[in-house]
Length: 169
Image 1 (tube, one colour):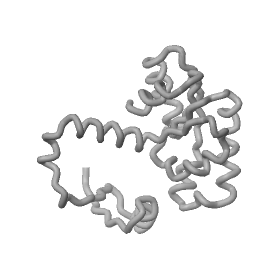
Image 2 (cartoon, one colour):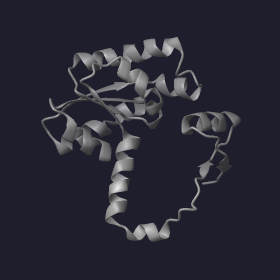
Image 3 (spheres, helix red, strand yellow):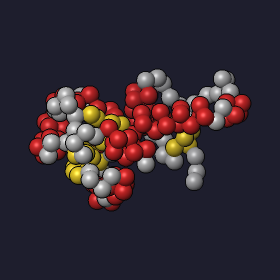
Image 4 (tube, one colour):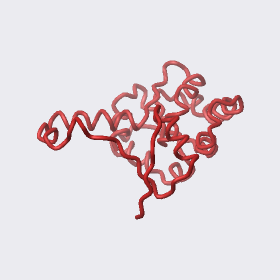
């Protein structure tokens, strides 16, 4: 996992926090992957089950969201972590709010940015792929379930209006 590789390199005190959904935390994936890279790491996880519904319902700017974020993060801060992994792609929407409740010394890392940088590096090393990709390429959004809410929130989070095509798996 690129994010665990990155976290294991940037931590200075070997204390990494992970926030994720209940399923992600229960799976132990981050603990397994991080300690595989560095068995001196101490990994502290916190399930944040209310984050996804808050984001998906568009309530991420509400006052109660701040209270929930503070509640979820306080125990991790007490563990003296210096790195926090946003273990769910939804959580990027809350990143700036999350940072408000953390000491400035804690680095918050988002999987999307880390993976994008890894891909960029890969593409630089494999320039032949550029021949396949076109400057005239376009973005397509596909989903197995299309709702008006999905397109509205997707447009908001993506920063421009999106159109989603329904696909069958």
